[in-house]
Amino acid sequence: MPHFYRTEILKIEPQPIFPEVNAASADLWNGCLTLMDFYQYQRGYPHAHRDFYFGKDCAGWIDKQLSDPLLHSQSRQAVVQRYFKSWKSYSALKKSGGIQKPKPPNKRQNYMTTRWKKSAITFVESSLCGNRRVQLSMAEGQPKIDIPLPKNFDMTRAAHITTIDLCYNHGQWTLHFSYKYETETTEIGEEVVGVDIGEIHPIVSHDGQDTHIYNGRYIRSLYRYRNKVLAEFSQTISRCKRHSKRWWRLTRRKWKRIRKIDNQIKDALHKQTTQFVKYCQVKGIGTIILGDLTGIRNTINYGKRANQKLHQWAFGKIAELITYKAKALGMKVKVIDESYTSQTCPKCGNRKKPTNRNYTCPCGLKYHRDGVGAINIRQKYLGHFGVPVVADMDKRAMKMTPPLGFRLKVPVTSS
Image (cartoon, rainbow, N blue to C red; front, side, top):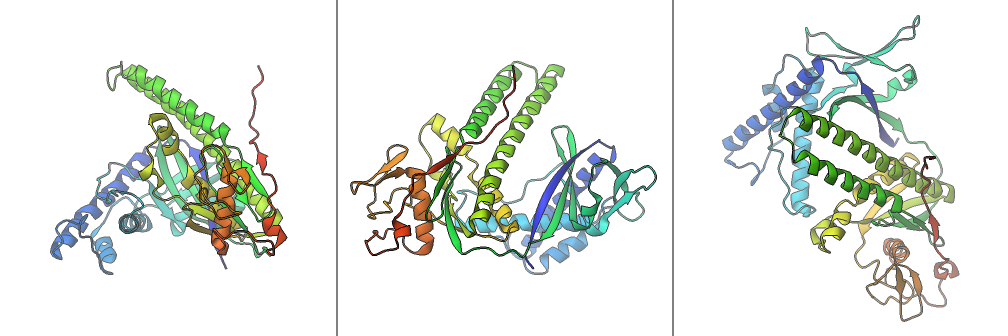
C-alpha cells in the first residue's frame, strides 16, 4: 500500500548531553570522509570528487570501521546512510546538470544532526500524574536521553513515528518527529490539472475548464521585509567588534527576527498549497502536472533587483509541498519540461514572447500569461501542445473561462 511521511517539530529545553551527541555524529561523518579517501586511494582513484566510485561493499566496510562510545548503533548507521545519500545526490546532479558546479560531500563538520530510528525510541506515559516523556537510547552502557513532552502531545501517534532528529538552530534545540502513514484508498478522478509555478503568482492551475490564480504578493512582501531587516542588522553589526557582547546581542536579535519572518513565509506557502490541493480533491483531479524549473537560476540575469527576487523564488519548496500533500490524498504528481509553454498560443499554436502580464496573440486570443503557461503544461502532458484548436474538437477544450484569482487571507493587527 502506498505511504507518505510527515514531520513535526517540537521545541525542547537544552540539556548538557545534546552538544556532545551532535559532536559525536560529526566525528562519525568526518570518519566517513577519511575512510572514503582511503577506499578510493586503494582502488586507484586518489581524487574521489573527480573519479568517484564505490562498490557494494563500500558502505558495509566503512560502517564496520566506524565506532563511537556514545551513539546508538542505529544512529551510527544513519550517519553512514546520510553520507552515501549525499554522494548519490552529487552524482545525480553532476549527470543531470541541474547545478553548474555541484560540490561533493567532502566538508568536515563540527556538529551534525543526530537521528534515532524506531528501535531506539521509547515513549513513557505516567498514568498518575500524566507526565509524557520520550527516551532515546545511546550506546551500550550509556544512560538514555530522557526528554519531557508537552501535555498536549498525542501519544496515539507514537506507533507511526519512524525517526527522531535532534536539531540545533540559532540557540534553539528541537526534535523533528517523522511519521509514516498509509495512503487512504480513496477513489480519485481521471482529470488532469496543469500547474505553472511563478514568482509573482506561486500557483496558476488549469484543469481543462477553469483557471485559478493564487496571488503571491503577500509572500513577496515578506521577502522584501526580510531583505530590509538583514540589511539594517548587517549595517549595524559591521560597526561592532567581532564576537563582542554587542555583536552577539545584535546577532541573536537578527536571527530571532529572521526566524519569525521565515515562519510567516512557510505558513503562507502551506496555506496556499493546501487550498490548491483541497480544490483538486473536490474537483476529482487524479493527476497534477508541474512544470520543471530545474536549473532556471543559471540563466537568470535581469539586473540586481530582479535577480534577487528570482533567486529567492521558492519554486522547489512549492513543488515539494504540493507533491507530498497530493500524494497523501492519493493523487499522482508528475513533472514535465515547461519550455515555451508561456510563449505558445493555446488557440493557434503561434509562438510569441509576452511583454506584460497578459498574453496577446494576433489570432485574437488575450489571456493571463501564467494561465497560458498552465494550459500549455496540461496540453503538453496530454500530447496536444502547439496543436491549433479546430472547430470539430471538443467544445470543452475550446472553452477558456476568465481566470479566477485567490488572495491569501493574512491576519491584520488592530491599532
